[in-house]
Image (cartoon, rainbow, N blue to C red; front, side, top):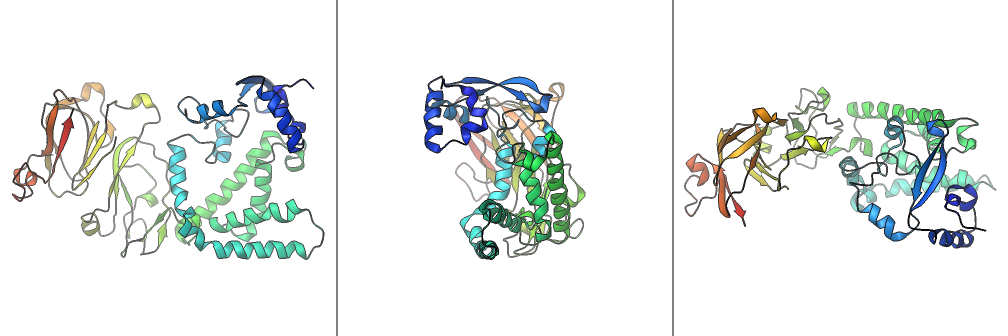
Length: 417
């Protein structure tokens, strides 16, 4: 047999024994590092398209380390680029690029720590017993249908809080989505419509479950996007963001406070970019004073809209947070702080998360930062040395005269080499 890269998309290649498949794959690797393969795309009206297979390890590593050039967000698990409506249904982590990929992973990672997984161990053991006892009573069974299909899916449904009554809905939909177009699951001529219908079925189910959990949160993964480990009530307010009212966070106004050990599901799409922050809206005078807040820096969807700077730092008044321009956030201040930088003026490029048009930007060496305000400024390091950034109210610089050797209150040093 003459080796051909086109064999990689033929089912018969993958149904060979492992020994035969690896032997043929070794021959295909010798054809080159990047192999063009022509294939018919049923999603584009049976148009012939060319994709490229990388059969060698070094090239796969190079692609994996260059996400700016090689994206996953158009369908990493599909030979073809998928329509956006399909990606929204079938995306998953694998079919996402950063920052969305990282954000989504962070949301669910909390539920997969060793401690959290220990909490679901009893559920896994119970499901295992249930599934095995079930097919043992039947005698001879198809092991895929009796064990491989239901066991992992029942565990996932249990973790997500999906009721058993909806298990068949999830099973049927996932069989279609993972079928690769197998007529056994999508039917003859099912095509893209079968995939869309399966995705809509899951999206509808999860939409209903999320709404129910907002009213009656439990301890499942769907409810655990925010978990309160404080000894007192809390909420999260997303300062300056446009979002659904029920996501805004004021305790007793838009939601019940999150009780100690309790959870609340915050879910919204960020439609702005810029400098924002989050803080509690339950007992804010106490909990913010104790440091319960943080910066929320949202990158623009279009990188061209970002104001470029060589280094980025975020200064939160009452707290200092290092990040990779320079940003002032009046997170928990009761006063208006005149924030000043030594060594020359800076350019104010954004106020309260809103990027100023180039004609609106202005030069200054001091900005008045009120409670809740944010300023993004670009400061040019004109000379080497140690340049101060500080509040220009003298007793704020000196910690009410406690610091006498250079200051130490609302003050930091920019060390320019």
